Image (cartoon, rainbow over all chains, first blue to last red; front, side, top):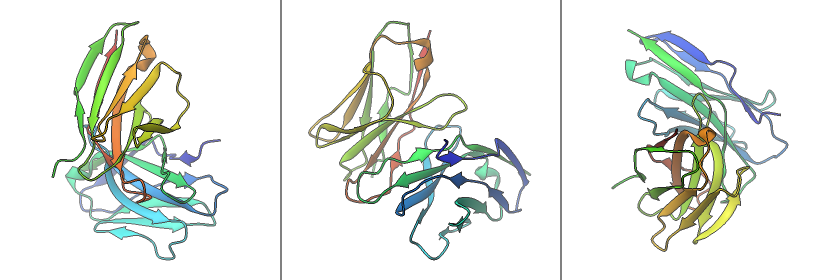
Length: 116
Length: 113
């Protein structure tokens, strides 16, 4: 079974509007971490936001927020006030277990295109 | 402060050949992980190096091997190249005790013909 599922291969949004990118995960661990990365056409994976499984508050980083619904095993990324520079691939990833042996598993990604 | 540096940026090889990709981690990081990203896919974990030893390995054949040097830089070697090895190879560095906080390089685009 897929550990990370991103069901939206492509998303389109108008500049300045908000967009939600979906991510569901599968784990039996109690301690885990969820990440979102942005990959522009240059190839570099850029870290956006992190949510720990024990964090009670949803993570926020500037225009990025993570809608963490533990019971539903979902970790959707919300981008507010989209900008043209947000056009990129977005990957959800999960680290299982605690400690420093940190090997995240990535989903297949969602392509986001922001229209002017 | 330089981030993760990978070289070369692009490479074309013939089936059956061998290739070496290089990675210099972000200053202060001691752990290097390698990922393979095929077109249209998410990155797949190859292996991770810490203290010059392979700590964990993903589901990749022995044709994929690596090395970490005392200065924490790392190499990924692939022998007997197959067409299916064509991909973007990403290097990520981190601090072993930090738990999260990968910094990725821009990758090496390998094309096998």
